[in-house]
Amino acid sequence: MLEKIKETAEYIKSRVNELPKTAIILGTGLGELVNHIEISTVIPYSEIPNFPVSTVEGHSGKLIFGKLGNKLIMAMQGRFHFYEGYCMQQVTFPVRVMKALGVKTLFVSNASGGMNPDFRIGDLMIITDHINLFPEHPLRGKNYEELGPRFPEMSEAYSQRLIADAKKVAAENGIRVVEGVYVGTQGPTFETPAEYRYFHRIGGDAVGMSTVPEVIVARHGGMEVFGISVITDLGVEGIVEKVSHEEVQKAASAAEPKMTLIMKELINQFKE
Ligand code: HPA
Image: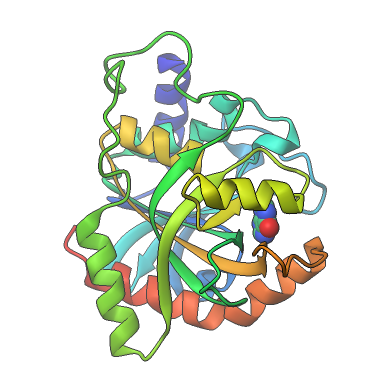
């Protein structure tokens, strides 16, 4: 594993002039952020040694290097989901490589189903914490001390100072944001009404099928993390409606401009 991470990092270093300290995983609702990046290098995943190969045709991902505002950044366009069949080491490999490249801060986004009755479709939820319900843990197996400790502590998985910065940016721009706990599940089914109720009762505000593995690995490596989720459907007791992938995409697209603005401003302003 260490050799692979090194090999991949060396390859990327050979193609990129200036290495960033900030990385972004462009999840659902954040695709448009690419248009705000002053791009210097694009590397398709298919060219990167040891990177997982995309399973969905026409969805070949890319690593993008460039500047967002005044920050040098790298962005993952396309992420690897556990439900696609990747193992946890594959899902989180890019985060290991980011760390090896010198990345200190990771920004992530996703779409999720809201379970908190105060939430509305289209809300942006700043992730304050998570509950890991994936059936496999990304750190299971041999621990490499070079990558992080055997038993990482998770008391502040999501950076309090970045949460405060993001709330400030939202307020300054008149954007409603909510805060909450993200429950990470494997999918690919959306939840039954009983499952939404269960996830809410155990302390979740929204549920989705990504992010938690990447955040765990980022924290294992000592990176600071900020996450934001667009609420694309509601799994609130009594009002659970049928949800489809199309509806999730539609709600995420509608919320995209405000999500983009918050991320762009936050990344521009935060202290690296
Ligand atoms: N459940 C799980 N994942 C999701 C949902 C949901 O309701 N909405 C968007 N991603």
